[in-house]
Length: 358
Image (cartoon, rainbow, N blue to C red; front, side, top):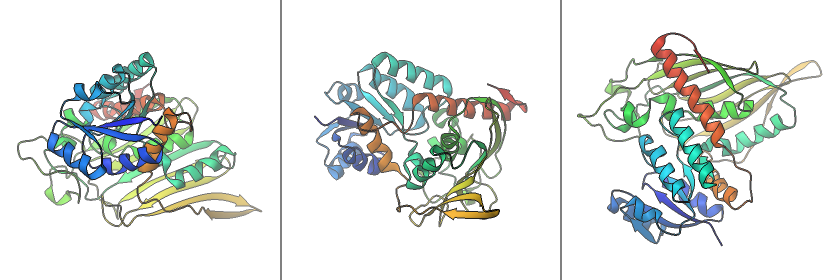
């Protein structure tokens, strides 16, 4: 029997979740949204047979798993509600508004005995998986330090909407563009964080000339109370270090989406080059290893298959495959908790001006 998957939220990410669940062998059978008309439109587009405007009614059906595609504030409560209803859960990023909510989600998953995964889709990119093979076989050695970056020059996703309202989003680009931080930690083996020192900046956060080419309409009555950019340093109990840079609006040559790392045997870089801030249709991916061979410095270019969806379809497929026992999960709730603890600590450090001990 194929895993029956239902979706909460008729948002744009459904264009990846739907083919992903089907690729993984699942059956997409239902969609729920408070805007029932939007749910019906998505159902028509993706040939989803059942449509609901009420979440409780939706969760009362015989679906096996739930995908959550809603604003960040609702990730934890909907995930917990679905887990308590006996459903596996695949949740869009970020995991929740903060680490405390992730702990509640983990407790609910453990009590229900169900799979809880998050859409850290960049782990499923071909370049990321190719690099992980070199890490796993010892070519890289121990990754001593890493520098994840997701920098946008003009990438604010609307003003006054849920993205820029902290009580709804949890934060700005650190929360929204957490993928490279996660990918760096994935390469590093997700070590236990020790200390976090961070600073946020709000330059340009209300400047309309820094609005990105995607997002949601401006809301003149809404709030814009999140950061425009953030920089931070994380040390780990293992002795490893990570320095991060995330921004929606920051003076830079172009959008940069990359993880660079330095290992005890080799260094490396995974990078995605965008043509326009926030738009990835023209993206080119690169994957490189930096080694010493016969006394010479050698840069190896690792060729992989093109992946225009940034691993989103593969990530969704992996969720179904994990449920059905045909694949190992690409991410775990414990990793999500470490990530959110780091993000919480970065914001706390920015507020206090002092390092935060974890």
